[in-house]
Image (cartoon, rainbow, N blue to C red; front, side, top):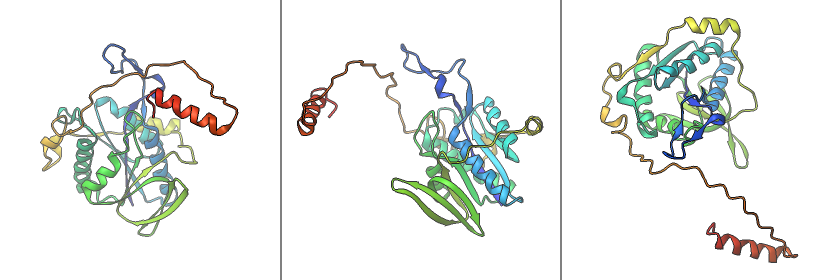
Length: 267
């Protein structure tokens, strides 16, 4: 069984600050980590491999050269092989362009590694929080998709997903191949051992450029292929004003609260 896990190296959000002058993220000196939701996706793949030892796990990321650090970490945890999509042509891609590039690269990788039975990814990246890339990859490739997966298992030709919903959980069965995006699960991702870390350092990561992806349309990549335009980024102004609403009766207090929110232009 072939499983592909899409991962992204992101800045640690606990360390992120915004430049008050330029209103952009200050990335200098900010440590990078594997996107936590992608870590849960990798753990889901590892748990499938625990039950089906013949499973191969391949990880794929897109980004600059330093994204290899995230892939090395994944190799130390559970992955058998890693690919990195990198190049100037892909810089500045929004979610639509990114998903197109990833889908094109996946189809190219399949020619070498064989068809993937399951493609996993985190539900979203913590530096963007869009949750769009996974479903968009499915749309580009014409594959079935299941989002918000809390658990993933494989039974024959079926992928069984315990899907998180507003009312609890749904049990969904979908045939291979499919794309599944994973939420924070009840089980914590495993850590690499010292031995696996040492082995991961020696493994080679294959870098994919635009020249390695046949028939890719570069007008759909990078800034040219990105319809999303960020108009402004800012830090919300902290307002410490507090108003206590206590009119005695609940109904009267509720009316008073609504009036205050209207005056504050919140409603």
